[in-house]
Image 1 (cartoon, rainbow, N blue to C red):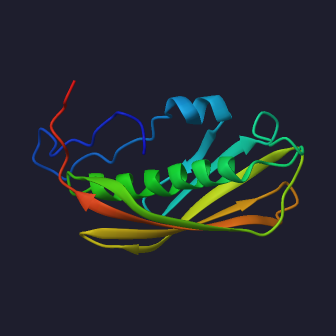
Image 2: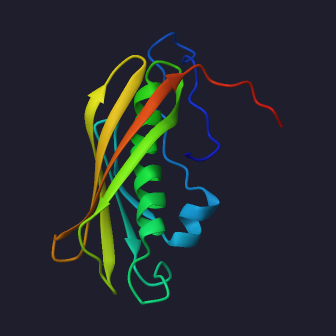
Length: 150
């Protein structure tokens, strides 16, 4: 799930809460993820293939799943934060279409449904030639924010 920053339940002026801003987690940083665009409707990020390859030199399928889940979840948390809530992943599935051995991949999460209790996003991972490498679908449940348990 997304970083540790929680959405605020309301602003001091009583207006709608400020949308959550993406905070990279430890794995995201290790994978070299960079945020390009962020909103509930669309989150775009990039990730280098180098450092995220499996033993045969191909982009690791697990890396695709990890980054795809993160990007889709970030979009869901941005949406939930507009209601003073958060989001947790309940389902993710992926289809690997092709792979790549070098360069940078682009990860784009696009909203399918932004509800009050659930969100769905399609996440598409493409290579530098805009070829589709992987398609994910992620569903997140909108929940009340947990009390800080530190």
